[in-house]
Length: 426
Ligand code: HAM
Image (cartoon, rainbow, N blue to C red):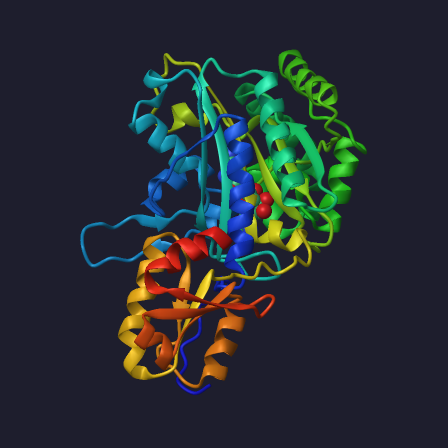
């Protein structure tokens, strides 16, 4: 179409026929989140760019290549659209002193995120996340890790996602991460020339990321230095914590696979990390991911005297909808559709429609009128239970002919009786 401005690459419209599927997903999620005691938090969709740079890691792909900065004409420079939710939730948690108000803040959020990625199936520039964060002083407990994973798996079950598969790993404590960084560099340095260009940079900036590089050559180097399926050399304390998380999962009958190469793309994680994949999504098969990020609270200015614990995850809702497969369409319906036989009757039909709506009866009409047949067709299309017909005789007698659209039965009803008549039958 000439002169039509289309939507930006990597974004999508959610049309009225699709919104009921989103709504159903959200309702299911809210129901389960309430069972687990999580409460909704809403933060702006843009933040100070330094929030993301400081939290997600200057070297992470999300910050390095994908941040969408806002250009404004005022002095509000240095703003970026949020690429994820965790950083902003931690910012808000600290700014609003939630640690002083409650022991453990169990928060969830739902909304659009923005990443300047190369668009492909399941990878968008604007996508929606449903995220969950549990943050509190002294809150690190393997049982909380297990709760978060149980919550994620319960939601996926309620969404009807096919073949969810939970992969978990532990990156160890902050000290472990620093030590393993040196350990990995030492082992990788002789193979450096064999690594892909991205991993050459990761070697310097975040050597952990070499472990989950998808390039075959990098994978074979990692296998050579790590062995097949060998865990990272973590401290006994970190190993113990991870073992407890696994025991809790087993006790809850939640199947999982330990994936020693799972490291995640954002820098803030320590200890437990996880990813959940689903069937039928092709290469972008992670429907959700998350982990522990207790160190981020201090990184973003939290009181150093407080021993914060934090863990969470986020689902990609577009991917969840893809993983649900073909869904039966949810057809909207009206209770009543006004049909008027003369444009002169429109004011009366309009008033009755508003009266019905005011009494909680959903109603509609066709503003351009038309023949009885075409208005009844419109009533049919809007799945109306009843057509409320206003003809010459009815106008004179201050009545309407109410037609049941399912069985075609008809009944004459006085104007003042219309609402109770319909209410009785709906
Ligand atoms: P993430 O792995 O970057 O983690 O994103 C979580 C999920 O969002 C992914 O598993 C995927 O389903 C979806 N997603 C990510 N990028 C895109 C994209 N470009 N297009 C479509 N879907 C996408 C986080 O964002 C962390 N904040 C999760 C977290 C919460 N960790 C702790 N708390």
